[in-house]
Image 1 (spheres, rainbow, N blue to C red):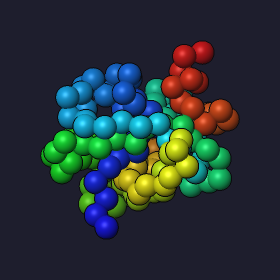
Image 2 (tube, rainbow, N blue to C red):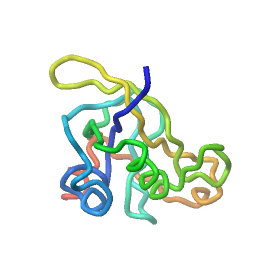
Image 3 (cartoon, rainbow, N blue to C red):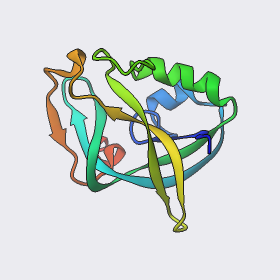
Image 4 (cartoon, rainbow, N blue to C red):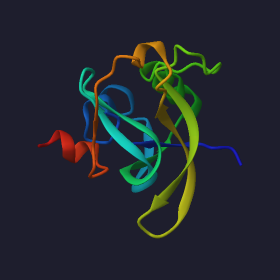
Amino acid sequence: MLVNKIFVYGSLRSDMFNYKKLLEGKVSNVVKGCINGELFHLDNKGYPAVIPGNKKIQGELMELIDFDKSLEGLDELERYSEDNNINCEYLRKEVDVFLEDGSTEKAYYYEYNPKANINLNDKTIPVLSGDWKEYMSK
């Protein structure tokens, strides 16, 4: 099955700053959900990062009106390119999103790439609540 949804956990959530810049008016549906992973705040950059893990990460599953076109803008924001090279700040991966109604859907999300040159000196702070938006409101 072709993945045509995106899971967002940081600045792209529906009331955060990058949503207004990149996604407003381009989303046909938003539902709350969570994925498994480890969540960090990148103190030197001001945005979050998720790596594989077993904690619950809160976010939103979004259906985009023009998926491919919107994805281009998101890939640019996340410094991702198809060749998954060492210069990708984030890697776009498939993930299982667990929804509040108990169902699971596949979506893309951006996973932090700790091996990328751009990330080597990042200051990572664990976000134990699993909710970056809540972390930022404190």
